[in-house]
Image (tube, rainbow, N blue to C red; front, side):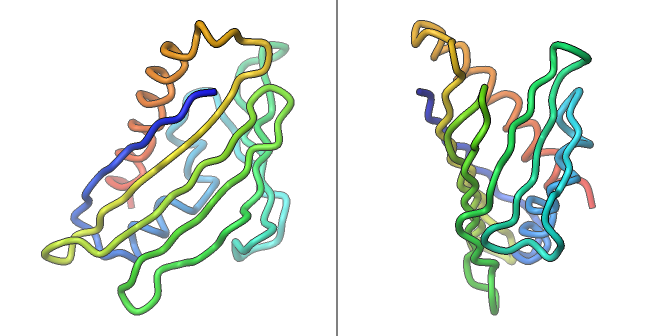
Length: 146
């Protein structure tokens, strides 16, 4: 089991940072070889389900996720979203949060715990490093791209 935490500060209003991070289909534009399909009618809410399919051909896997907490920011206050991963390969959870920062900026956290089925714990440091790199790049790009 791997746990990691990413923290960023973005020169965006909190509502815009939230929108950029929680438009699930945008994640496919950033994560290589990934498609995202939202299976639930919009808007996102507790119970929304989507699947990220990553890979090429027979080397692909599905990462189904369910939104279990949906607390969008209101009146400039913080917002939080928790996703639970229900996949056969990747399991765990991710929690995204936005907080008011100084000067109209937004503080963002992405906290995740994941496990990869069949992968021995000896690989945890590699999985942590790769996850931090991929999700760090994802968060950075989502926050930079309107």
